[in-house]
Figure 1 (cartoon, rainbow, N blue to C red):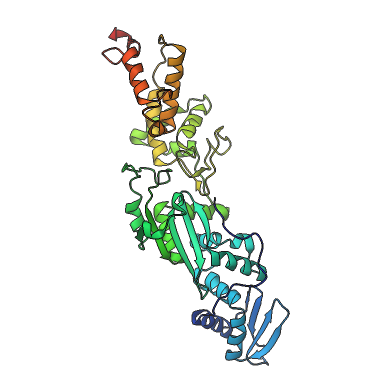
Figure 2: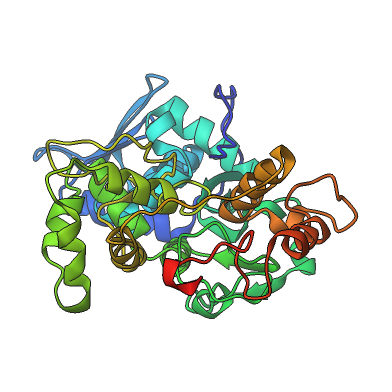
Length: 391
């Protein structure tokens, strides 16, 4: 996961102008009897027997009885702190998935909101900070009045000129853009690592960046937020499959008191990082973990998805077949070639194998040669029929 933020704070804050919206919000808060304490800038209304405003700074400066114009002068000197307070507190808010995500994007969880933290974050934002979310690269930079400008693009095109990409500004457009992969194949799993390239969403505000990311990867920010809050409700394999009915009810017959090896096979096949960018948090049941790693994704998977359920239904039927013994005659190289072909298909590497590379076991011409040699006219490997009565 990319995180382009400076490790240490610079000595001086970046040049930021105090905008009217931020100052008006500050005055409203103080006039409502609230105190503001952010980034080394502390302001509050005067006590009952005093007039104006009281301001203290991290440098030890204290001013009392400030008029509104005096408050504006001092707030302008600490524009980074005031604009950061206005953005994070008044505009973004302090609760919920969107606020949590926006804060995470610019490293509030790393640097905090004290004086040094604000300076460090603003320095990073001035240069442009970025983090990866699945295959998305989400960037944020600082505007001259402390506002934030966001951009979303494919992580593989981090260095591409935005002018060379197809630009969009409506977050809902992402729904159409990510429906098919770069080979124009339909993407049934939204979190599969097959996100198409060639587009960019630029000049987004904090609402737009959240909506764009949630459109590309539905519910991922919401579940990530719930996990951070300790509120992620995980539905494990047994309870999820126990709810299946109709044509999917057959999956329940797979649990025959023989352990959960079959669920390990399912998870290894479908829930690997190479197949899905979510981090699997569901296990066999609440007391029994699976033996397969759950992946390294930033956002969690709270239950077996519809693709897993659908695949498990098919595999349940296949596993119900009685095993048979077949005898084939292959050379050692041919046995290894069959294994290589299975690996290449399982790992989706067939497109990477060059036509001229006949030394590669899954090469198309070499595979066609194996078929010509070992398949009979009925398509049986080594002439061995699948069903004994076919002989």
